[in-house]
Length: 192
Image (cartoon, rainbow, N blue to C red; front, side, top):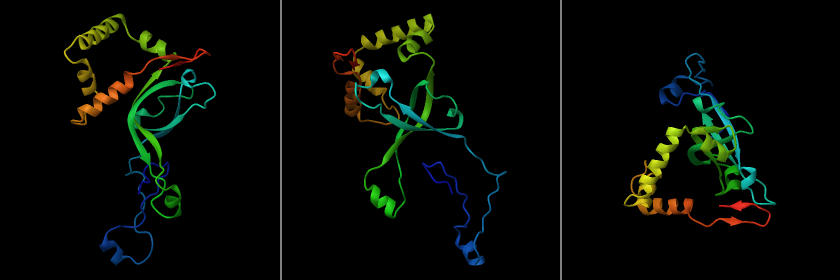
């Protein structure tokens, strides 16, 4: 048995079949066969806001990221990364006192699907990582979308393409992502 969303592994010891339970009256009926088992690499990352994006006097927010398989060991402490993934709730307990104490509050984590490691600062890595041809091609694609019939519709359809419909919600999410005005605080901090 695998304990999901935890860093624990407990092999299943009791056979769930009714035939097994009738035949054996004593404890363990199943034994772990390590040679026949497939183990997947796992890494837990703590993602933290960039220092220049944290308002003065605030503590940087952090988020837990779970990486599996080939996504492990791509990032080291201190790296600036971009992570694509699925935002999920983490189960506190199945039942009992811990579940009652937690109530409706759950912790969350991101199940990583893709990790991009930026070696330099975030702003330099985007412009510096592209070759001249790629940069020109990217600018052409941006101009093509901007001068198209419905640029907001084109961009909003690119948000969560695996989810069918919900065009109005996708359009609202896009406008929240790119909307808003830039504020410059007296201490030089930029917001948005």
